[in-house]
Length: 552
Ligand code: NAD
Image 1 (cartoon, rainbow, N blue to C red):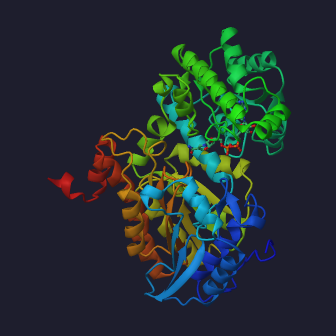
Image 2: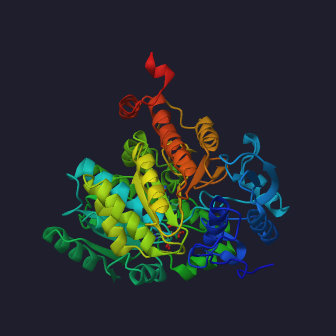
Image 3: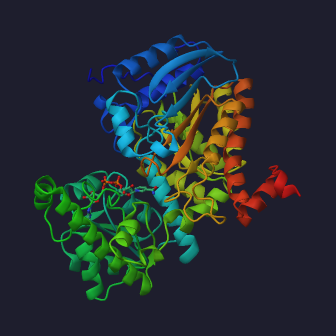
């Protein structure tokens, strides 16, 4: 049955279940499929291609029914979006355990997955879709903001003021780039081939202005750069054509990247010199010719990026696999520019930082504003973090349950988790808060083409780490824990774990929060210290994280 009428916006303090832990799972499942949050709720699709919250509507109904009946000492087991068992456990154990899209390694490919999916035996969980902690586009904006902030720190004294960034792709995730650049004080020219995508970013204020003329874009960018004004420009054009044209005019940006959907040559990348209509026609008439044209355009695109890099542009890959395609097309030095994780994010992972988030189960935005105030008070000396919170309050609209994301590290998460729990206990916050994170975090993902690209000790493909992460978080008393395969980069390329914990104001929750919000980022520090990162080793020593092999 295709319907969203089953997705109910539970709000306020009245319980529909036998306790706040079960209630949190119920409300977050509903929230993932809220029309304000999900891309295609009628198909149970939350985001990221076919990332789903439940396998089918029958499974969804049974999960809801099970959560409503679930006792405080029982655990519901979910296998690829289907509820398969309820066991008696204990009150400190997770209320839900989830495994999504996992395949035995030799079978871990899209063909096998699609076959099983068609038979109704599996579901693609993406990252936060199948683990019920997706909060809409806020998560993407902040990750992108963090990437550009770290780049600014490394190359431009902490601000992108007086710099021009060139990128391409204003889609679901790429659309966050112009806002993230302007939040860091810079100028952004984002090349996008589809006019409707630029229009959407203008509507939601992610992009400031639009132009069809390269000449005008360059003039506006130069003026804003000179004045030190933050400005984002959506430029209609094909990146494979625009970048070589920029080069021939002698224009070299300060920063260069790309978020076209290069990971999918058939549906994601528009070949050079082709209108959208021509591309749509060729895609149907001759998929082979389309893929060939897209791949050779990507090679042209990457060659232009390499030339700009050699002339001084700080250049990085933004996780779309464009380097691999160019290399396969004969651009031998395509990997001369780094991926964004080794270049900008890894130092954060070394101190256990990553996309930490929380949502107000009451549905009342005031509850989130109170937590914002607590962040500004408790972390007042962290200017970068405080800036983010103020900008997020100003620029980010809530989708579904009010929520907040901010990158906190080891020690900070446990500290802040206790503060939230205290605020719930005292009644300052009107109902419990659910605390979680993306799977793209410090110690919870193995993904050799992205999050674990170029690890210092070569351990990129070792996926013991996300499994250990999930196990220790479950033991510590997380409210729900998930282990997934294939999120972000597709089948065969990643394994990752999710965690969510409820702050309901009780003493028991305080203890669980202390444990889980220590072990979870702790595994991130440990994973990176074990790989030999000095910053992670220093963090482990300073924070007293016990690593027997380091203690010798
Ligand atoms: P999307 O499909 O929604 O958007 C892609 C956009 O690129 C579209 O608007 C399309 O019109 C445009 N485009 C395609 N070919 C073009 C060309 N030749 N020139 C100019 N524009 C072109 O995808 P999305 O969700 O925005 O993600 C984009 C890519 O970035 C994906 O490959 C994704 O995997 C990657 N990504 C990675 C991370 C990460 O954390 N590593 C984060 C975000 C996105």
